[in-house]
Amino acid sequence: MNLVDNKAQEKRRFLRHSMCFPLTFSIIKGSLKKKSKPEKTETKDISRGGLLFSSKTGVSEGALIQIKIPFQTKIFRVKANVVHCQKNSDTGLCDIGVKFSRTKEAFKVKLIEQMYLISEYRDLQSMQSGRQLSLQEASQEWIKKYSERFSRLYW
Image (cartoon, rainbow, N blue to C red; front, side, top):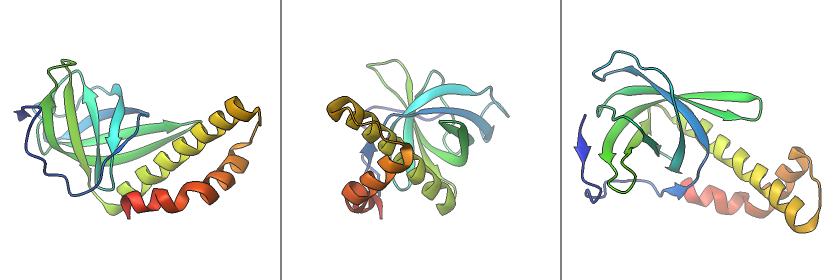
């Protein structure tokens, strides 16, 4: 495990977007442990190339992990490689940065993020205006209002 100080030099190639949604990860290979028990956590931020989340335990740089991201009744699975593991002095947890192993994985996570944003938009419309939108109606409205701005964040 390569624990780095919180103020490590910035090496990101892609813009990060703060986003918090649940995930479960487990180590597939490349760590001290061959495989690990799944650990539940949540994202801190995501980008076109990867994501950042916290863990109770560190993971070796270069390890291949499987990430499961639930959304409603579905579970999306993506594979990623650990690029850094930093001990966060404020939380005592390890912040783990991963990069997606393939473009297909990155695209899948972008779609998941969009679904979470649409779901939040639907909830916000319900609270603010009392409108009860179906997920499809909320999707159509959200896409018209925000999809161009959302696409500029990544592509």
